[in-house]
Amino acid sequence: MDRNSKLINKIGNFIIFMGPSLIAFSCVLVIPFLYGFYLTFTDYSPIAITYDLVGINNYKAVFADKEFWGQFIKTLSYVFYSTLFCNLLAFILAYLLTSNIKGRNFLRGGFFTPNLIGGIVLGYIWKFIFANVVTQFGNIIGYGPLTTSFLTHPDRAIVAMVIVTVWQYAGYLMLIYIAGFVGIPKDIQEASEIDGATGLTKLVRITIPLMVPSFIICLFIMISRGFMTYDLNLALTNGQPYGSTRLLSMHIYQKAFQANEYGVGQAEAIILFVTVAIATVSQVLLTKRFEVEA
Amino acid sequence: MKEKTKVLSYVKYILIYFLLILFVIPFYLMLINSFKTTQQFVDDPFSLPAINKVGFDNFISAFEKMNFSRAIGNSITITTIGVFLVILTSSMAAYFLVRHKWKINRVIFAIFVASMIVPFQAVMIPLVSIYGRMNLMNSKWVLMFMYMGFGQGFAIFIFHGFIKNIPIEMEESALIDGCNKLQSFFKIVLPLLKSVIMTVLILDVLWIWNDYLLPSLVLLSPGERTLPLSTYSFFNTYSVDYAPLMAGIVLTIIPVLIAYLFSQKYIIKGVVQGAIK
Image 1 (cartoon, one colour):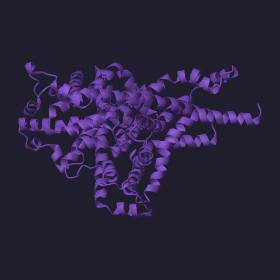
Image 2 (cartoon, rainbow over the protein chains, first blue to last red):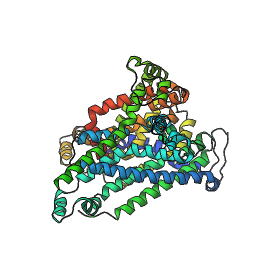
Image 3 (spheres, chains in turn orange, red):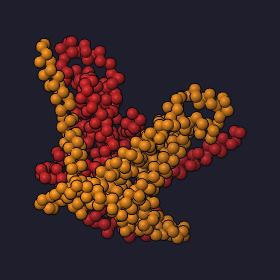
Image 4 (cartoon, one colour):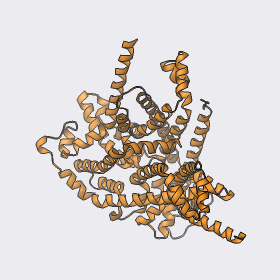
């Protein structure tokens, strides 16, 4: 075979193997992502006939938008609390399930169930629970604060969002923590027990340091998903009451598709992207420092 | 000492089953209330439905108003074909990227991996604007193509990690025997990927089946709606009468739970593999 036909062969294989993947990937991700950057410098609107370049005006508008930053802070605290409580609960569940307990597979399967169902359906289920069941329960036990729905109070509706998020993902993170617990070498556990480490000491000194990789993954999953939450938000609260639970994704959606301000909406989306990138990368780098060799 | 561990073990059981009940009680409440009338539900959501009044009226009404058979059909088509396209194209691409360590391939792989942290919201607006102007909206096929694109990053990452550890010798001898690249991929490499294909399959099925935002932007006409879309529109249109809504939720959950019952082992394994890779 001469050089030329070998090259043609190589290119042919490249097109066959990589072509479909690259075309689809570029058409839905790369091109829209780059075009999105361009959009942020225009005043493009789907209902106007022409549009102009406006420089960095969209970014200026976003940075001056108090409402946006209020929702930004709200989203940050939503992500923070759901990440914290979800990981805490998942870790406890995994700890209990890896100790000597009967019916492990059944329990594991049960806790994982919410993950099979999409945010829309989960949101509607909990809407009923908060509106009708919790309030009835409050009436029965005669506890005042429970008799009105969580979803009608600006302060408590966001708590409801956190509760459902924790419930939704705890089973998923639990599986990852279980894999982490199981992956700890037996000899290290035995050695620590011979040295007299039991219960809490063993957990804090041996188990948790060896499970740092699991923590890295679980925190990453919760942080990135938290920032992108949309379905649950839409079905459970739809941003109500008084816009108190409108998280960033919903804000961007409404800016673009209800207010028809594509440029501003996309500038906000870019800010969301940068925030997610900074939050996840710094989380991974930070937790990596706690990693130890087994 | 022994007494103490025994008590501790009881506490453990009580705690874990208490938590499990808290976890599944929402599903249980949905189920029992889906048989009641709205008034019965509002008065007392905790009681079981009266035996002489158990009726499937709510289910029949939900089934019709949600256009359930149509919606589940759309969901099945989109999920099946979408996941098939993702797996086929991403496994081929990952194979090529592993076996040819060209500079450009390294760059391409890095871009695929980096794409995993791009939130969908960052491309949502341009996507609607581009595809809307080209009149490509409102088509199942365009949606499947989009899933194919969005699925690449993660699937290639997983396949790449797995194929890296497959020894190249078998393929080399196949090449000497006259197989071309395609044949050696489909006959030798693909069969070895079975377990990792299961992982990608399960995660992508769960993703596409439950996805709401992307189909809500693409599929505009009622006839094209997937299950999450028809659930949403059902709830927005008939929000006054609770009881059929709950029946609608039960209807959408049941197929998933049945599938889960039969493939729980694989699903859990797949999810764990996908996360810790």
